[in-house]
Length: 289
Image (cartoon, rainbow, N blue to C red):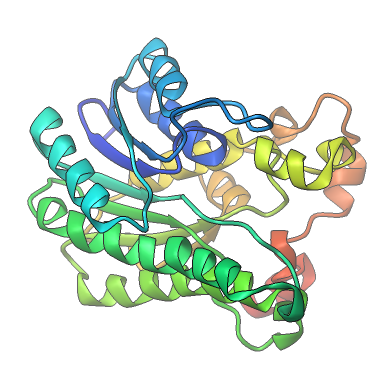
C-alpha cells in the first residue's frame, strides 16, 4: 500500500489537535474520515468543531463524515459506527486519539474527574475498538492506532504527579498490547506517543503561551501516524513508538519543520524528553540497549 486513498478512518477526538492533524494527513491521500468528537458548537477557548474539521478535511482532498459522540454514551458510539459503515461501506482504520486530560495529584482528583478519565481514556478506547473490530476484520489492511504512552513500569516515580491521569492513559497502552496478541496476523494494534509536548489548543489552554517554543506541532504526530498506517497490518503490530523515531526510520533527518517559528532548534534538540514525564531520553536509550 502506498497511500490511504479510499480507506476509511474512524478517528476519535478529531475536531482539533492531534486527531485532526492525523485526519488531515490521511485526507491528503483522498481518505474517508469519520470525525468522532463531542464539539458541535464553538468552545469559548478551544477552536474547532466536528463541522469545521469536516470542512478542513474535504478542503485537503478527503471525504468527511462528522458525527457528534460522547465516548461514554454507548448508544452514540453504536450509532456512529453504523453511520460510518452505511456511509463509507466499512472501516479500515481506527485511531483512538480522544482523551480527557486532568493532571492533578490524588487529593485534587475527585471521583467525578476520576470517572471522566477512565470513562473516556480507558473505557472509551475499549468500546470503540471492540465495536469496530467486526468491520476491521473484513478490511484489507486493518490498523488500530492508539495515542498512548510507552508501557514503562520500572519508574514508579513517573506516576507520582498525577496517578489517575497516568494510569488511565497507561491502560490505553495495555489494551493495545493485549489486542496485538489477541488479533495477531489479523489486525495491527500499535501505540504512538510524542517525544515532546505537542502544541495544541488544549495544551495552550493548560500551559499558556510560554510553552509554545518548547513543543512541536501536531503535524509530527500526523506524519508519524501516516507511516505506521502504511505498514503491513499482519506483521507490523504490538509496537510502542515515539513520533520522531518513526520518522527517522522513514528517512526524516530535519525536524525543524515541526518547531514553533520562535523556537531555538539547538535548545530544543538539547532538551528532548518524552512528554508527560514518563521517560527521559537517556532512560529511553538505556532501555533500548
